[in-house]
Length: 134
Image (cartoon, rainbow, N blue to C red; front, side, top):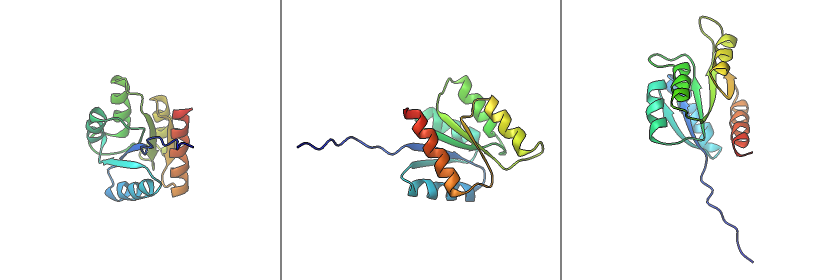
């Protein structure tokens, strides 16, 4: 009888949000669920991570000072990066639904309207990672 043991490297995620508390809470939730998590404070910092290593999924806020989530999506598209992206937003000047629709048009694979529950976050991540392997 042989043990069929495969190398089960946990999926690597990148959380991008200008709010340090949100980044920390998401990191803790996702790490507790078994994911390997990196964090960035804006789109510019996120692109440095993305250019240096690959991720299985990126979760990014839309509205951030400096380089925002929409700029990150555009930069990834220009670089032909195919990493799945979930866009998060609590709204702003034009309303949350409009930002999330725009993110979908720019290639987001999923959206989360803030505030969202830990269950919603984990289900969204699991669903998109499953689709990646199907």
